[in-house]
Length: 307
Image 1 (cartoon, rainbow, N blue to C red):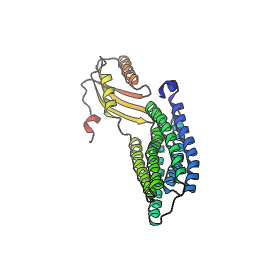
Image 2: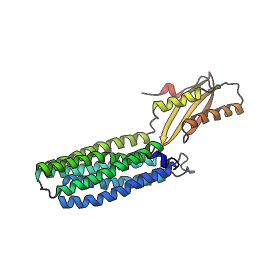
Image 3: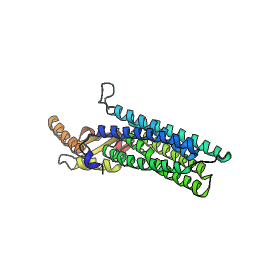
Image 4: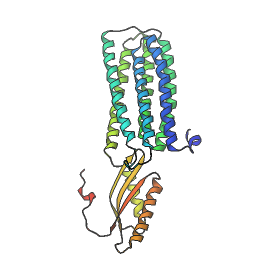
């Protein structure tokens, strides 16, 4: 539903809007949850409040990362600043994990020292409002993350995807307290939220670390690149393809095998054609191609890689 009105908006603007929307929503929900948590005494709502505070931190970090990663390459950083996005995701995962551990501690304490709740109906209403707002934000952020390949927006959206599940669990737990008098459902829901937070933090940290370590792009991307180059009449082979993701920008390096009798001018012209074939597939990509004479024996990266 977002594609039509936003199709002409550039990627950096979309990422800015997506992260800004996350900050605005998190602040709004934090304020209403502070009131609901203090008024009802619900630990489940308090856990959701802690999650909203972590969302504010995460969204601010994402916004800064998106802005920083969009800076043009400089003399000192000629690959650009795309690594700012996985760095932000790593920081977010640490904060989310800390929040989850804190709420688990409070949940165990509430089991040991039960606290009665008041006016759970108000809490249910606030959490339903929070759920609907979060669903709208996630739909928008998922659209932006898919269109721009931004891990920062994807990481920010992941927090709110978790919120949908946790808000639903909290609504159900408050309903159990209100209609059936099962008081222990409240700390149980809080612990459930926290375990979910820890799981989510692990996933974010793992993905961020893999990107920072220059993990290869998916096989389907690599296969498309190789196939596109091999379709060129002048191509005698492709080897030593290396690829990585830098803030949504794909970087490719490969060796192109050409007729050894070509002039330097012709080899360069053919290489430009091959680069453009790759950029037709991935318009934002950066491509470096080394020319090799076909049949030339040399040490190849492909023959020395470990599993």
